[in-house]
Picture 1: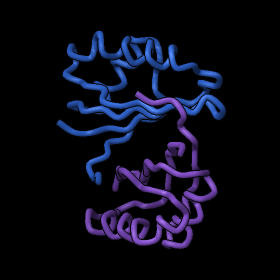
Picture 2: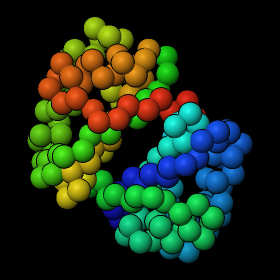
Picture 3: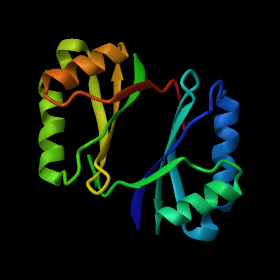
Length: 82
Length: 82
């Protein structure tokens, strides 16, 4: 499994409840693609959201996000981490 | 203390040793601004690096990164996280 960071733009004004609901929508179906969303961080002011996941591919990450209703603008493998 | 995600572009080909050295350069001086860099993730192929930190302000995060020789392209407060 590889690690991925994906980025969503345009989420200005996102609330804690909305972030939690979006994350839960991913968790509900992620197993179908062997993806696991581990963390998410949001800046309601600029509207950017970052999600950290483990997955077999960037495409699998994107498929879960799309089906959950929030396609990512970027999905990057992050093979290096500290 | 608030949490921040910052992004560096143009780091194509970054190696594990280079990521570690950059992170250590931050850690060596971060206390002077009451910043703490917690995690970092890198994609050597696209050249993007993400750093997660706790800090009193985005400016403090940027000052440490600049003094360590790697100014961030974006620094976002991420008051929401999961």
